Length: 365
Image: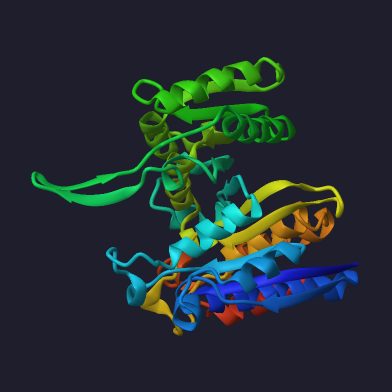
């Protein structure tokens, strides 16, 4: 089979980890006889430097015509001026909007061989295997008015949280469907004791829940959920929440797995009926890590596991996805570590060495 993949490395360590993800993708192609045609484009800070915009039109065009998008990271000190109207992060926000990607999935799985590398006590991590489903195109990050201004009383700023019934319904329904295929539990997270948008969210979640009698629905306030993720993370199966809450909670949940460098994500839109797959953008959840750029310290496993999600959701290659995931697990069980997940006395692999290890396992196991 043949697939066109848009590759957007971005800034910082993005190009380093993306190189390893593409290496593993090519190993999948060699093993299973697929052809993955990769085309590269600029996004984020490097796009600002070259084109004056974080999201050039040719990047959007490439993403739209591709089977899937593999994305690195955007941002960095060079462009970190809150006063400028053009920022690298606008690249990923604009891409999500342009592609209609309304759901961000962040699987959180704790590998028992890494339990001691987590800041939490190992006994709290038994059985942790959840997915955070974050609404991606509504809420505070997109709604208007959004601005800063000066008055005689001083400076002011406003952001607007706005949701429609359609936006809430489509993300909740995705969460219920996922819970039905997993362990049958959905935690809907809101702030219904304060926010009108959260009251709407809770009402719709309750209504949809009646259509899924096989899924246990619980409502949880976001502050309580933040606490439960630390004191009892094993209680969660699927968490569904709005954009801002999901951004914060999924990063918090990422710490459970020892390092944000381990964490993949998939941003999904509607099914593309003419192709029979789902439009998606796949990226590790870590940032650009400018302090370790070029040092071979970046953990590529979040990107490699994002490749596995891409194989599963957009390319509809579940067996190939499973091979990648099992190769990552075998490497970890065998003691392969990058600096961020190594305990005292353990040998450390470079970014490239870890990518080479996973690629070889994909080919030969």
